[in-house]
Amino acid sequence: MTAAPETAFEIAAAVAAGRTTAVEMTARSLQRIARADPAINAFTAVFTETALAEAAALDASLAAGAAPGPLAGVPFAVKNLFDVAGVTTLAGSIIDASNPPAARDATLVAKLRDAGAILVGALNMDEYAYGFTTENSHYGPTRNPHDLSLVSGGSSGGSAAAVAAGLVPLTLGSDTNGSIRVPAAFCGLYGLKPTFGGLSRHGVRPFVHSLDHAGPFARTARDMALAYDVLQGHDPQDPASREGPAIPTLPLVDMPPQGLRAGRLGGWFETGAGDLVVAAAARVADALTATATELPGAHAARSAAFCITGSEGGSLHLKNLRERPGDFDPATRDRLIAGAMLPAHIVARAHRYRRRFLAEALALFETFDVLIAPATPFPAQPIGQATIRLNGAEVSVRANAGMYTQPISFIGLPGLTLPIVQPATPPVGVQLIAAPGGEALLIQVAAQLERDGVIGAGPRLDLASSPHEPPARHARGLPRRLRSSL
Amino acid sequence: MASSDEIDAFVSAAAALLDLQLSETSHRAVAANIAILLDRASDFEGIKMADDLDPATLLRP
Image 1 (cartoon, rainbow over the protein chains, first blue to last red):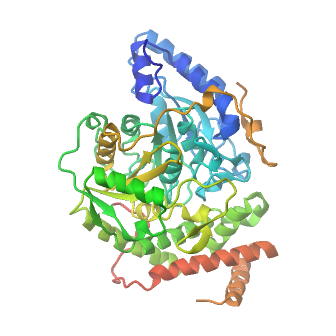
Image 2: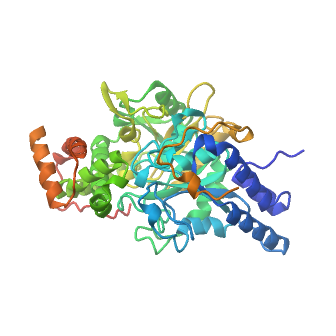
Image 3: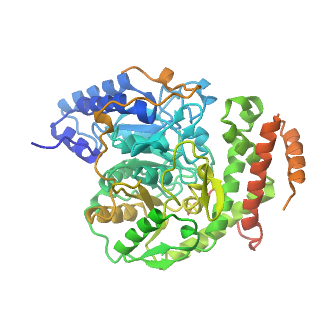
């Protein structure tokens, strides 16, 4: 007896071979969402009717002899800042809930659909992507499937939790300062932040134009390669989109990387790191026989990213900060207002420092092919815990979970969170970082580490197999109104 | 480093310039966030940079 397909690769292969159908895979995903999501709160909308209709249409076209796409019948979901035709893009806010539905899919959503994947829903996030915990005051917190008392990370927390809980094998998120890599680490998954401009952001609600990235989550390196190959490619509709040929990644997954030169980042990237995190980075570094190195200026880079984020984010939302201040989460609103007030010379200087820091980082890649650093300084913390002791000071969890990811996204380097999931401890993640355009190498190295048992998302959680008591809904909770019925 | 009184005055002036209405609670929170931003800015403001170093507002690495 063959095991039921679980990964995106297995599902697409089984649908293509006629061993299962897109309808069967979509219905299974919808059933899992119905049973497990009341406890997790990853989804803000479930597209039951359209998903089943699209799956049925795909099955019919395959039966008529059409060639299956690389993601035929694979259920997926997207952070609710991606445009989905006919659906209002929330971006985690109630302000945007009054916007008209999107006229067309975001480029990355369209690419996945064109490849045969079936969109089953939209996912929770921090309001306007400004946070690292997905404790959304409007739609409730997204809970970590590994331990429902913990945050899922953010801002793409719904995207991480939905994959970690086995509700869908693939999701999309966005990453401005760490919003893919942090929740991937907290939920024990692969999360890819591509090179800046590497994947299209067209149709993705902006947060910080100069720092925004979009990327996928997956449970295996092979699924990450499969998704990345579908998603990559120049998009003239995104002004930041990189030109040049796509580099197929899937063929590299079974090829061990040769002569790899790995560096383990110390300095800033060890400051305040907890024991679990340090051990995880050491585990990967040992497996890759990495040499210790440093990226001077990372602290300043993180600070510059912090200032650019506040300023651009504040500017973007200034109209609503004036006209609808009461409709923001107060913490988000006050950070955005402060950012909007930041003197221009600070922001200009931050952007100039960005150029300098990039040059310094690129010089490291003359010696190394990949760099290793923790993804976060600590694993997922309890929901509602506002602060954590770090370097002798009590600091905000929401603002500091990304202290190791921010310097990397600041200069647009590709970074892949490698999951380390072990019994009795919360998941932790390690960042693998490459030179611009090095996504294929990152996934190739991850695949080798996964084969060697160094990393991995662990067995699929069985949250979807048993019903859970839903947590108390937030008083302003809207998701149930926005859901279509199953 | 600006004093808390100076930051309060700055927040009041900036709110007026930007046409933002701040409650007392919000004013305090904004001032706290400004203090954090200024502290972060001090991490890179003193770093010497050549005048011909371009800003990377649209980065193409």
